[in-house]
Image 1 (cartoon, rainbow, N blue to C red):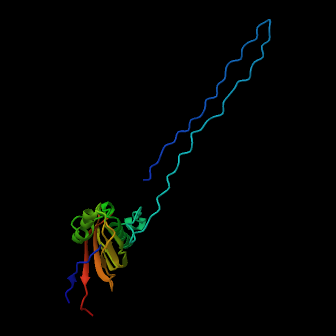
Image 2: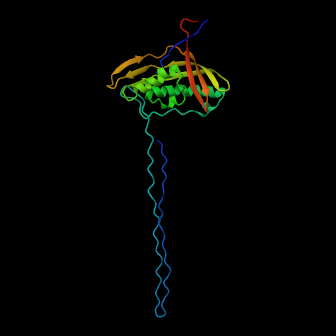
Image 3: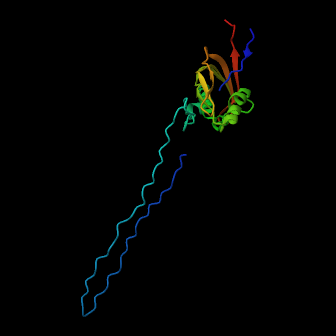
Length: 220
């Protein structure tokens, strides 16, 4: 039975160097008394060392989730786990979950830089469904609420410099708002998980080369 490919919508800290200024302690040679008079030697005076005020540490802004009143703010970029950096079957599975966390982040923030860093331009769905829409919508003022993906990795295979993972994909309900705050549209949650495969290459780390979803409609 032939399978068909289905198009699925996927929608600082800076370190400061602090130099403490220490006060100098001065002293002078004692004055020798004259033969006719004795002059008491005054004790050497010193001033206590001074220190510069402690630098103020700017607190990390609190992440604010997207809602009907506005877009997400200060949303953290997903951090790649160490396991996802290895050229192993376990690394492929961990990278797959990390990649879909980047998908969620991109849809929520329109910041495409992190996902571009681990995506080959040859990935058609990555470009047309995630990266290009993010670039087009950035700065326009509209925003998404919801749409979190839920991914289960079912298998992973590896060769010398490439790998593939099989997964099932589901997405929560997504609400899209215009800059005016008006609700533009609602994308219902998926009613069943879609199976798919993530194809990747390993060059100093994993990069996605293709995503495919298998159309199971009408199949038992």
